[in-house]
Structures are given as structure tokens and as C-alpha cells.
Image 1 (tube, helix red, strand yellow):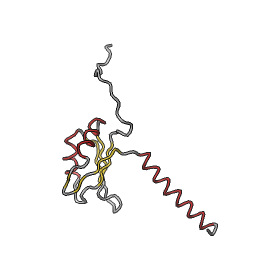
Image 2 (tube, helix red, strand yellow):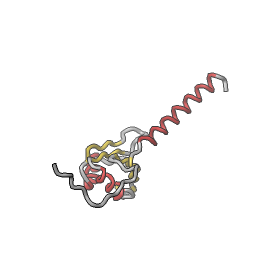
Image 3 (cartoon, one colour):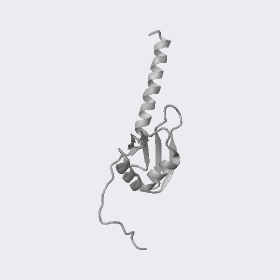
Length: 119
């Protein structure tokens, strides 16, 4: 069996690069079709999830099939003007999101303890 043919250049992607992009500052009236049209220019998309609650409106997650397509889209669409709004495109980092959830949960626990002990 022949060895796989890998490119001669070896390079490493930054650790935050992944297939999932988090998009902020979206126009509230943007449709999924418009998102697929814009982000689909950079590669095959597995899924797009638009925020639909008051807290998540104006945000979306875009999941690409390939990490390099996600990297290209992030680089090219960050700052893109869509319907008068400049998009903020970031790599989704679940460990950072989970830390925020943990902090909120911990603050709630501390409030409950203060109330229980009359502080």
C-alpha cells in the first residue's frame, strides 16, 4: 500500500480554529437562505442556526464541513457589511462559553447562601 501523498508544506492552525463559527451583529430580519447564500460561498455548510429568542436575536452559528472553509469564511466575512450592519465572525469556543455559564451558576449559588445565612 502506497503512503498517502501529503503536501510538502507543513503548517499548523491556531488552536481556536474550528469548523463552527459564531456570528454576531446580524440584522434581525436576515433569513436562513440569505445566510446560506453568503456563507456558502466559502465552502460546504453542514448547518446554520439563527438565534430566535430575545437574547439570541442577531446571532447565528455556522457549521462548515471543512475547517479550512470555516477559516476562510471567518477571515473574509469578519467586518462584512450586511444590510447596514458589520458582521462579527468568531470561532466558537465552547470552553469559554461554559466558563460564563459556570460563573452565572456560581453567582446564583452564592446569592442563595447569603440569603440562607442572612447576609
